[in-house]
Length: 437
Image (tube, rainbow, N blue to C red; front, side):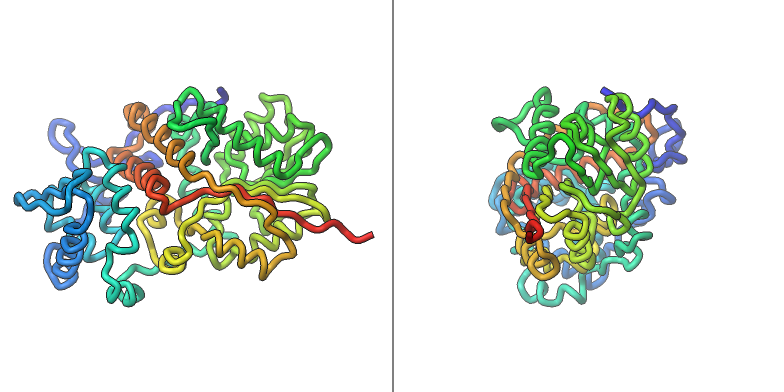
């Protein structure tokens, strides 16, 4: 396994993950207010938004197959996975102030918990469309936080957004990913999955995409979104010549190291380059879970780029996480917890949005689409369990307790999305008509 060179752990307050303030006798005294200002700040406990949030939340919870236990002894729900609300005032106050961002921040602050976090979040994901009453849904533009303009995926904005997540630390990702360093869903032979089969599942996913794109000896391949280089390595091992684009300097450097170690540096070029700046034509374009970082405003540009870079008769293979079309429309302008803390500027498309964008802005044809969401749920479970098992190593890298709690919530939240069917993942084959003779 080729990973990043080990680093000496920095003092937590200076690290990429931020720091946890330390109180008397070295005991943690809560989130660092510099690194985590919105978590460290006291939750608003009074006012009309808090009162309304409490009423809406309690009304929703009464109808769900959950068991929600409040610190005052109140219990709500019809039974099922348990949620313990340790500080009801703060819990309702954060939701009243920030909606679903507040829900996630309340978890990060330790104001609520769940013995089985994935199970509890799966129930909430399955009922996402029903949690907010229809009248309030229609007024979403008035109460939901708006996506910050600074997160718009312009060329400069995209670099900042990608760096926020992927330049955290190669060592961090190496702690919970398998030896292929693949940060996308694998394809397993059977479910449930096992950790020792994850690398094979990642290779199976990559090989399916390369087969869809008909990558072979002599193929000219453009990869949009390098990751840590595994797809480029396997494409080059087939005899292809690969140009791979990334906006993450950390990923580029490690991908180049891994490609050189595989003896394939003469066949692969990894460039720090925005997809909009790509030039030339290729027999195949491959892009794995990149469209999620493009932003709805730039989906037409992204697909036009695929069209422009493909030679006549070429094939593009994409892997994309998708969500229901109505929920995508409702959330496309909304600032979310994932957008604030994990993937700024990100938005999952719907299969309908992909089809309509392709139809309206390109000459490409959707030749095939294969969903396999349950495999992503299992991939995420394996990552989450690995992350939890190696939490002390994450801490040694300088990532504080608030970061680790945030990351656990992110992995559980994502897994719940796939387990509930709210999220799915697709492999697409796009084709371009050959030039007329």
